[in-house]
Amino acid sequence: MYKNAIKLFLLVFTIILSTCTLGVISTNEGEKKETNNKTAEEIEAEEDLEWLLTYVDADLADLQVDYKITEQWGEYYYVEITLTNVSDEDVEDWEFDLPANYEIKHICDVKIKKFDENIYTLRNTEKNHDIPQNGIISFEMLVKAKEEPKFPSYVESNMFRDEVDQEKYKMSLTVLHKWGNVVNGKITITNKTYHIIEDWSVECKSNFKMEQIWDAAVKDEIEDEENKDFTYYNLYHPENNQNIGPKKSVEIGFIAKCSEKPKFSKFRLYEMIEDPEYDEDEYEEEEDDALLEK
Image (cartoon, rainbow, N blue to C red):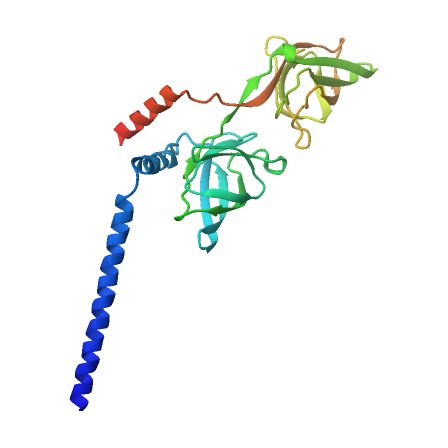
């Protein structure tokens, strides 16, 4: 009777094992069938995403992207993103395109400017407006994805500094007080347009040498080699006043030394604007070249 019990147990165990094996085979066949059932459009979209994730080369990148999945429940992932400035200069007023195999449900300390064909355009906020050379910022987001989210290793900023047309703004220089060769004055820049002059800066050449300045910062100061009475300045906005609103003005106060009436022989205003997008033909040519190199 004991032997019969053993035989019965072995028979039941064999049946269970066979059932499990068939289940595994059936599951694997289901996965293959699911893969084979992908449409041409879905396969092409996956290939495009893989290309976009590696499109920016490390040598040309402005920002390095590192990420860490801190939590996951079902199709939801909580991700911490770290951006490191790997360029040779400050990344100002940063904005970049982020190819995605997920949907962003919530994001902290970053603006979503737009979403088009699985590419998010992410933009800075006032608290993380610029990233200095070798500087680091972090932000978090909640995403929904059918599989683990993917991120590029490097990205380029979409923004660059461009000169503002002179008819779009007005500059005035006012002397408030003068004591001998010491001048207390202010520079007023007025935006004459209905759009924001973003992340403004100034290049100017003056016949006075600034001793003190407020509501702006001197990034460069170079004496004119041909005429020692003139000085070149590169002025930048303060952190709390980086934009000039529509029909608004900013003022820069200063104390300077000047033997004559203060004046500018050169004055140029600059702003950060979005790089013109590639046209479709140029984009496709670049993609084809990249695929050929691989």
